[in-house]
Length: 105
View (spheres, rainbow, N blue to C red):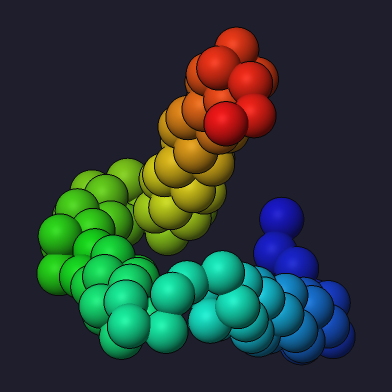
């Protein structure tokens, strides 16, 4: 079943707004929560992580699209995002528990 062009256009708008909101939020958080002397280094690491994954992930997703079709490629991309979010949530939960157990300094 193929989506309509109107639905596709509407989803492009929604995804674009969400991506821009995420990017702006990340940049704001990094700039407001980082020491001024370290800000450039932290932004460089952020950009390396955000843009550096493309040369690794793009050939994998391209192979999946060629072998299994574009829907599977989108699924692999979605699964990678969900996996990354899960890893981040586990890390943050463990960090919060460790901070709570040590108490305020």
